Length: 225
Length: 77
Image 1: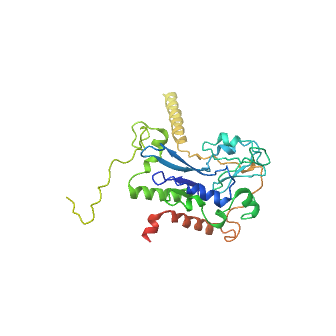
Image 2: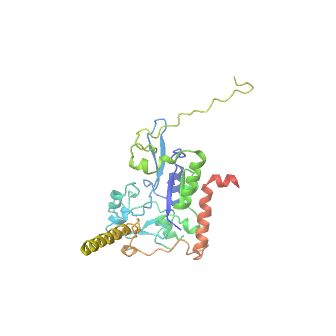
Image 3: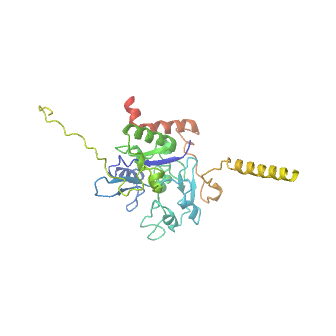
């Protein structure tokens, strides 16, 4: 198996925040901690796009690099997890993470900051699988049950995909092929703003809606002129 | 003449070595050294019931479940 990854299809996300709610409910996450959140680009402007963001389980995770107590580890499937018994709640990982994934509860053994909490890809942590101790510290271990992260599995529009990187990349490719667009949202041209590239990354308004509008429906009983 | 030939051969050999060096494939992803981790060891996800250590069965289950996210597959069924 390759690496576990998330992929959010910006063409499909409707900013319903169900992934956020499902995550909080599944893992009994305390108030003030959001392992996942929905970010909207050009909010309120026609053509706005939303993506669901959590820990991206980086291949070369900066949180692992900066942690002074080395409490992070990576599973064989590429899921970045950490040991809360070792975490000192210093917040270095929060500064290092480009996605703002590490979260800190407002109360706990370390005053106002507490030990770090983040998305576990529903893989629990370094406690016996599916034990109460694991649930209390890290939430439910769905991977050990043969299930995928709840945020992706319950996404109503299937905008958020989760699973083996190769599998979800194939699903996304299949989807883009069927609808004939949307693949340009992600990619080299968008990420690095290649001038003149067809990805549209060089244009600030690259997320504008498609100009083609559907023909208005014919009234009941009427004929099309 | 001999010196020129040997010099050319040396240059050619160096050029070949330089070009072939570009064929080497190095991993682009850092292999994190698990030894640095100071916390408790974790068990693989498939180590307990219902998979009981059967990694292949667990991978198949995960991959099959991932396909439920692909409605084009579900529609074709």
